[in-house]
Amino acid sequence: MRKPIIAGNWKMNKTAKEAEALINELKPLVAKSKPEVVICIPYTDLWIAKQAIEGSKIKLGAENVAWADSGAFTGEISAAMLKEIGVEYVIIGHSERRQYFGETDETVNKRLKQALANDLKPIVCVGETLEEREKNKTKKVLKKQVLVGFEGVDDLSNVVIAYEPVWAIGTGKTATAEDADKTIGYIRSLIRKTYGAEVAKSLRIQYGGSMKPSNAKELMAMRNIDGGLIGGAALKAEDFAGIVNYKG
Ligand code: 13P
Image (tube, rainbow, N blue to C red; front, side, top):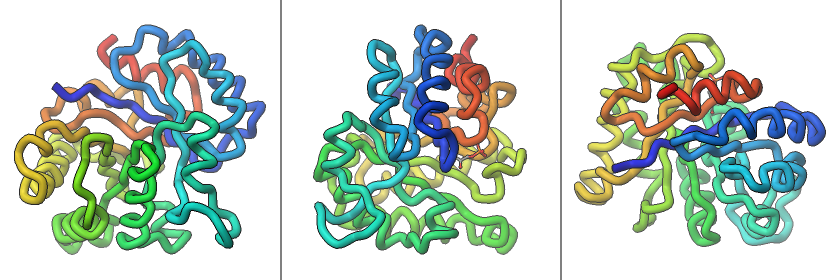
């Protein structure tokens, strides 16, 4: 059985003080949560968040990680820096990093290897743009993202994949549950081909893109969907908790 995982991606939102307040509001609301609960948050919020989540079920995640150990990489944050604070998860290859900051499948691969080498649990994002979808290129794009992104990675036991169709991010447009399930099923089949049936069966794959309390139950009921990566709705305690507690 795959344990569901609901992760918030705060993106570039919340100062440290705002982060502390949001976590304090969230804690009691997710105290009885059944899924694993993670918040992936700006670097500057991590330290205070680590104190704020103390004694709760909330786990800490970052939104990226450098591929190098240390050195002349202005603006980057290393795995060791994250580990020291107590970070457990890292998002890698989010579409906004790909779109605005030159992230490629090759750099995703380097960051993924670095995360795993340092015992950070990666949430690797994949997904097609609207243009790619309309040109019927979804499978081709996903195949490249998975094959190149995971090249040379042997052990997926700590890896989570997030399927985020770019056209559904922040737009209010959600993929239908059936559609998301089918595409995630395709991603699982790619994993099966490379890593075998057992790995494909145990790998958790999230859906992301305008997920909210009102559609979480339907999405989470699908066979292939093991969780959500939540943007906008993760910024309000009540909404995020509404997704975490999708079973009621
Ligand atoms: P929204 O939930 O705001 O659509 O964002 C999804 C996302 O990009 C999570 O990583």
